[in-house]
Image (cartoon, rainbow, N blue to C red; front, side, top):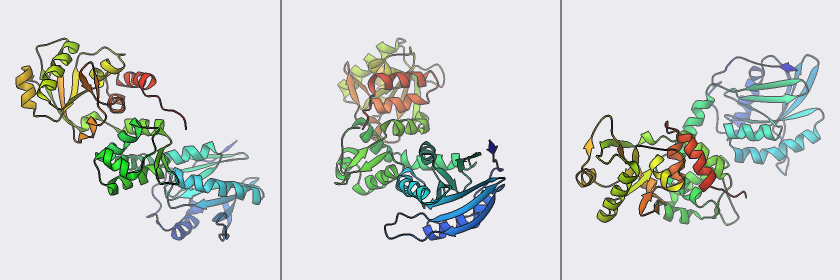
Length: 367
């Protein structure tokens, strides 16, 4: 098998958001992207009346191998755009003899790349992500900028307010909700909800039905992508020493005091898991609280410490962590969704506990 590998590439140029300009950029840079191949006959394909024609064709030569590539070019390289392009490309390969379909964008996200590979469709973007597989040619390259771009894109989705939308959708995975429904449940403006939903739709996590209701179609992927990028340390917390050494007994004391005083609190990490789906033994008690910590300190006789503490009180940077909190044995626990993302990157066997929680308590139905 012929393996074509080129050196790592940086951004070729500032990528245009205009489809015509993007096509021109791609045409200019195609020989550079396919360095090691002979590229001939680059030709723009006029769009047909039904808009089901592809954008560009080119012949590439590698030794005795000749192949005509048919390209469909989109300014957005997310799953939604790819799903629109796939039937166009599949139709093109039936119309053009000895051809191979290729999806093109300025940048193609990781999820889109995975989707295209599953459908046996190639891809190329102007950052250097390339996948071609036909005859004896195989080219699979990831651009060094991809990881940074994925992190930037995810940061938008896991911004403090945006995660309220994620929590609401994931705790109600089978409900179809309007923007106004989400706005009410998330205590956000409809404009803010629309912005988050648009991002989720572009990435293929949600779809909109004929009544514009939001439908969560890939809950597992959304939950895991969020969890991978979430870090409980984004919040601030204070470590305290309690004279009650038994963690279960300490939790009962906290709950009784908090409930009596009507304080906002919710257990998380291993303490929360011990009430929902116990799997790993624990010693430290972690909880979110928006209430004045002086009340906890005085009421529970706590001592602030830098090491050796057994109670961590987290001041959440957004009140969304309390959304859909649950009461178990008269103790407040964050939602199973929040518990999962908190546990996922927690060092002390957090991933094991998260997976056990997901298996036992978070069961998404396939649509």
